[in-house]
Length: 142
Image (cartoon, rainbow, N blue to C red; front, side, top):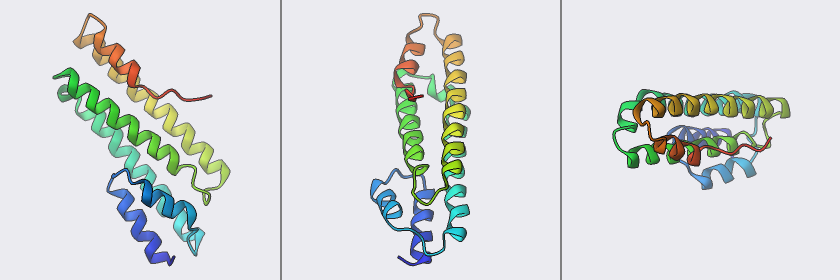
């Protein structure tokens, strides 16, 4: 696989589609020049993560308009974070970078969940929405 083909896959992944086929391609094919490719991979992970967080935080009103909307947002956020976690396990990433990104994913996604849970407490005094959020929260293994 050429460097240009590899970059094309990174750009496709930047589109925020969860595509396991593309993940497999970049997992199984090292880029010809890792030094040039590594910043592109990290930029793509950061880009996707930032968009996911912004999507959750900026759409709280819509999210809480209906329990089905809340469920949809929570499931999609969980899928995206788990996919990003898989991206953080690419063989080309140095172990310290993997660890740093995995810590970032965990702490920042937990922060998002905390914000959403607080908003749920304001929106629903029965606790139902909070339970829905807790059910969809990622269970990180320590």
